[in-house]
Length: 245
Image (spheres, rainbow, N blue to C red):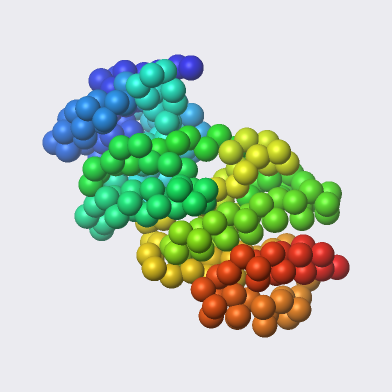
C-alpha cells in the first residue's frame, strides 16, 4: 500500500481540488485529527490537481472520493466536499449513511465533519461494471440483480429514499467478488429520510436489463410502497422479477 503523507503533493492535490485555497490546510488538519494518515492513489479517475494530478476513487460536482490510510493500518474511503460545491455540509449525508449502514444497505461512516466523511472502503466493482462482465451469463446477471434488489430493500428498511437509484449502475457497489459478496448503496447526498420505495426503482432497472416487462409485478410494487415496504412483498417481487423470461 502506497500511503502518501497528508503533506505530500498528491494529498494536497486531492484536498485542494479543483483549485488551491486557504481551506486546504484546514481540511488536512481536520482529516489528521479524524485519524487519516495519508492518501492512497487508487481508482480509475484522475483529477488535475495542484500541483500534480492524482488518482481518486470518484469525482462529482459536489465532492471527490479518495482512498486513505486510516488509523490502525486500514484503508478507508474519504468523501471530500469540494470548495466550489453548492452543498454547505456533508453532515446530513453522514447521518443517513450511519442509519443505512445499520440496516446493511451502505458502507459505515467512522468520522465526519461538514467537509468530509470517512467511511468503509468498498473494494468491488459497480453494478454496471459487473453486469458488463457477466452480460452473457444470464444466471449470474440474475444473481447480481437479486443482490442489488436486496440492497434496495435494506435501504427501504432504513426508511431512506435514494433519489438516484433509477440509474443504479454507478450507485451500487459490491464489497468484493460480485458473485460472492454483498451489494451496497453509495452516494446518499440527495437521499430523503422517512420514505421508502428504492426497490421500485431497482425493479424497473432489473426488468430492463433482463429484457422483461415490469407489468407482472407493477401491482405488487405499488402495494409494496403503499404498505410501507414489507418483507413479504419484497420476497414475492424478487421471486417473480428474477424469474421472468
